[in-house]
Image 1: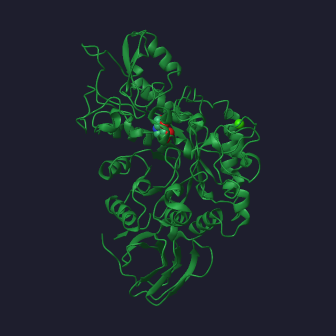
Image 2: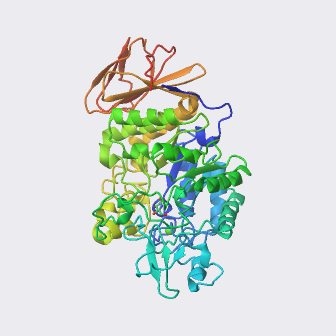
Image 3: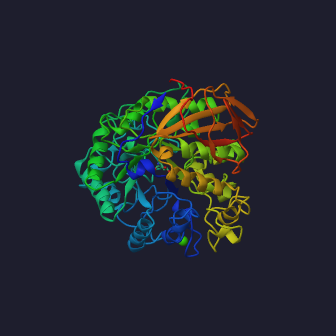
Length: 552
Ligand code: NOJ
Ligand code: CA
């Protein structure tokens, strides 16, 4: 199959690479053990100083930095138009935007539209009485006649999605923690207030938003029960009802798309502002978030490669299936790591993580990297008494997202150079060898590989904007594809096995090796054949296209 090259004028989010910063864990400038915005400013040169010595990313997405009681580490916002004092203030934020833009780095904020904190003044008012003007800003319901919950919906963090309020004697809905009450987006005042929030930050110069669980913001007005997947629904099950239901009434309603089009219209009032969304649904429902005319999200996050088995065939299938399903106006994107999931490297190992880096940075689509991914950072080791994540407390330590939130590893010194104080989460063992300072000096390190890939991608337009063609090979352990545009052509061959692979590529006359994941020049290829070492990925520049294409 072949997918077209991008349009003539390519927006920054199609060409560029996004880097997610988890601010608590990135860099602590004031010795309180928690990362902050000043810390981010100090590290901007590491991210992109315009030279090939720096990483070379194009945008940073900051996980929430707003005032918050931190019940869910910032995804419980108590003031949408300010900065949490732990992270800085609006002046530091403005300076961060200016410093980032000076380095051609775009700034993306996290927008949390589904719920506020229970300490947000809107909710404090709303819960104060049934007649408060803000009562209807949240979703309140009476108990059923028999005193039971309004419906069977579950919280993603376990247990029911309803919390009883003693004072006003009603339940309120919370799809996440009880400290995160869901807003009622059917109330026009809520919509107006939240669009004003987006405008506030656009006026501060931000370049886009990552919209948290944006498909969930509208609920069935009748609050009908979700169909239950298992008959033996056990309320004591640690996963709770959320994981045992089909979410047909509490999320992904068709009506939500009109709201997302409104978000997009607002973004379009400003030049080149990007809308990204956290959207987890199956392919046909997920694609709808681009909008039927490309008038919704620019990039609904594509998390599929986080979920498929680490296997050449499964990955190729996932990519090809998505490429084939996308309408021409929709630009793909890929994510391998984020702050909610265990790190991929801890699943696939150090060698395959290098193949993953090449895959992510050569596919057709915007890559989003997660801080530390470029160092080969592994899952943290967190004991019960070190655990911070509410999901871990409610669902059990194996669900704790602390694993991927440990401090960024800058040096092999005290606290890995993250902070001079005790960090809020323990350092991940092995930081002495996996850190920026040590890897910077090592010509074969993971960091060096990411830098080389990022800069090659920038320099070769076909690698960021070119067409994608899946190439047929006999070995089921290898995934081979081609990127091309305007006379430029590259073959990317990835070995997903720990064994050497000899590939026959009929009709191929060879080319020039641009990069091997081994960061040497030893890859062997001749007429019709390509030898890949164990766990090796290569990018080869080819002059003429004689490669056999595989359709579908
Ligand atoms: C998704 C966010 O990525 C996650 O960290 C958060 O807990 C939930 N949404 C609720 O906001
Ligand atoms: Ca700090």
